[in-house]
Image 1: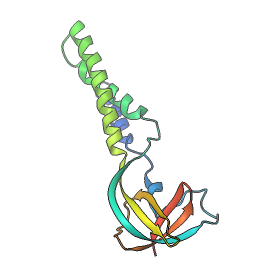
Image 2 (image 1 turned 90 degrees about the horizontal axis):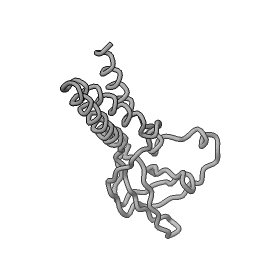
Image 3 (image 1 turned 180 degrees about the vertical axis):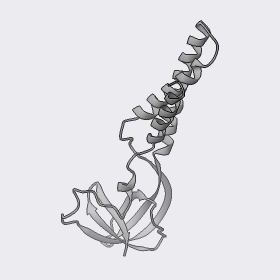
Image 4 (image 1 turned 30 degrees about the vertical axis):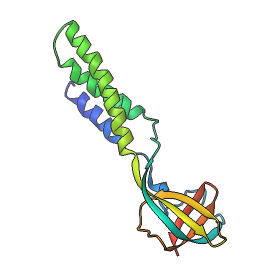
Amino acid sequence: MKRLLPVLAIGMLTLAGCANTSTMGGDVYRGTQAGTAQTVTFGTITALRQVQVQADSRAGGIIGTGGGAVVGGLLGRQVGGGSGRQLATAAGVIGGAVAGSAIEESTNRVRAWEMEIRRDDGQNVVIVQKADRPFQVGQRVRMIGSGANVTVAPY
């Protein structure tokens, strides 16, 4: 049983990176967008910048923090004896929680493009989406959707 707990805790930490980042790309539609009319505007990319998007964790950070605390506590418990063991366990829980949270946060980052686009009507807009395809300055693009649900696709 003692050997099974660390394996379970590491498995929980592995799942911490399971944020759904696929909806940030230009080739993926949300279920609510399917079958609905989308607005299409055209424009030209005037500036590109590589950025990162921090995806939200499905579990709100609980898996990374909790899993890290469990692993840290188990590792801390292996050190010393008596009150020293209790202190090591507490330090392991705290350190593991911090490390697990940081691991979860870093695995939920997605490479993205920040695209400044001059629309054909003369207005400049900036759209950020997952870097799932190459874009370049001067490229003609279609902007599909409106408001907070706009994706950019090559024209």
